[in-house]
Amino acid sequence: METFKYGIVLSGGGARGFAHLGVLKALEEKGIKPSIISGVSAGAIVGAFIAAGKSIEETFEIMKAHKFSDLTSFQIPKTGVLSFQKLESLLQSELGKVRIEDLPIPLYVAATDVLNGHVEYFNRGDLSKIVMASASIPVLFSPVKIDESYYVDGGVFNNTPMEPIAHLCDHVIISSISPLQQIQYLGGIMDIAGRTFQLAVNAANEAKKSRADLYIEPMKLREYSLFDTSKADDMFQLGYDYTMSLDFHLEKSLFQKIKNNLAKLFTK
Image (cartoon, rainbow, N blue to C red):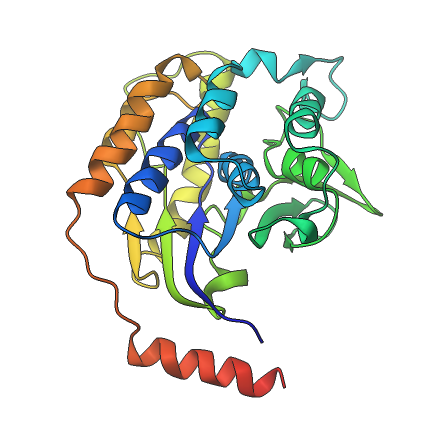
């Protein structure tokens, strides 16, 4: 079984995904580049571009050029108010009709199977369709049909999907862009949906902090909306500055060495 030096986990968090790019830029300057990526929702979008070989700067410019409204379209409510078909088209226009297994950097994308209630970690299949499914927040967006099932945002059950890559890596680094925001009131339907979703995923994230070799979560991201892309530069800079301020030295732990060796033993 192949092992990788650095596994990067990119959480969901809507427009705050720009912060992931700042985090990745800072890690790159510290000599850390992703050997394998696992992403969900916004993290799956960022992960798709990086795994396909796009630079951090290219990815930022592509994402910045498209507002949230540019990537969605209204539809008569049946299974969701909005459709992410435009996101699928953007991914195909920028990356081509590529399959996940053909990407230069291995990628896992988490999506929730709404028929059986399980999280699926895709490392094969149509990249654009699977990423679209991973980013489709329930109720707001229609589920995406893949094979014989229907999928929505993987963050419903796992917003920091380290599971498919943890045993494959010397080091697991989680970039979390969903710190729970302190609020005094609720706004419209988008705010209510975003808040409900954050509450659902926050508790599960806590358990991951001790399992990752490095857990990066800029708390000031609380100040930014899940759906407002107008502060892209600020969010990128926040992710970059926060990560650059961290003092860390990654060494493979004894636990990680044992885990990797056991994984190799049982996959022979």
